[in-house]
Length: 141
Ligand SMILES: [Zn+2]
Picture 1 (cartoon, rainbow, N blue to C red):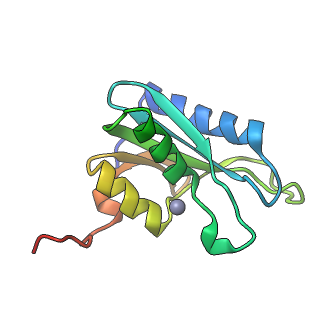
Picture 2 (picture 1 turned 180 degrees about the vertical axis):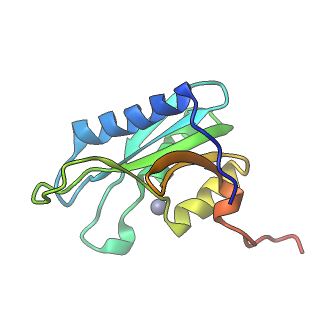
Picture 3 (picture 1 turned 120 degrees about the vertical axis):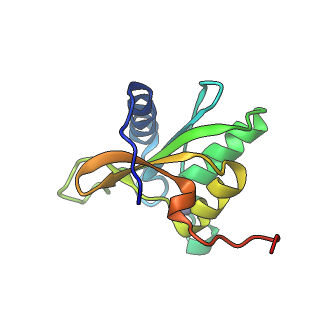
């Protein structure tokens, strides 16, 4: 899988995602934050909303994308999600997490050339969303 090095502006969205979830963290409510950068250079961030019935939970990436689109933004350059530890976890570090399968679908639908920031073998890198969802379902044959 081809990876790309982070640039300075990629660190800005990592810090924004960390800042957002640090500000809004609540046990069993919000423990993942995401931030995306639009191709116009704007940064949009959100936290996930957890529900008592798990399948109702909405990921932070999906909320960030919805927030950006609702504000008239369409083209996304990069997105990252970070997980805040639960209050009873020993490990206190915020970590970059991989998008779930549903978020991969959503990101590739709305931004097929978007970069995803991931930690691979201890190194933060970017990967094109298309490489994270090979042979994606398509209406075209
Ligand atoms: Zn997700």
